[in-house]
Image (tube, rainbow, N blue to C red; front, side, top):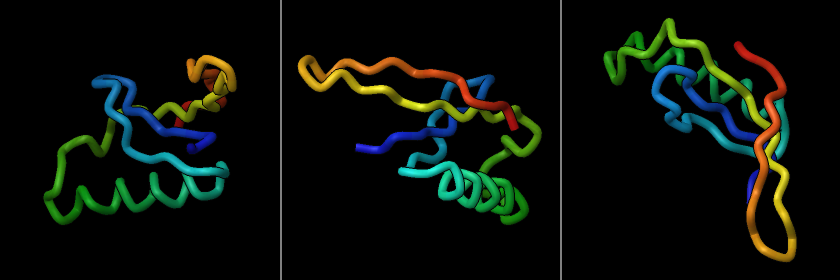
Length: 69
């Protein structure tokens, strides 16, 4: 499972997930560049990066906001 995820603030759509913040930031840059090719229209939306803390016994998780891009 991934440890970090990036979510659009307006629609709560997950756009990236990975094991480090560097991986997430690279995927966010890729997401923003896709807008130039007309794949989506979410260029100016705020993106929140969360650290996903998983409970090993029950599988439930808690998201902790790290930063907003």
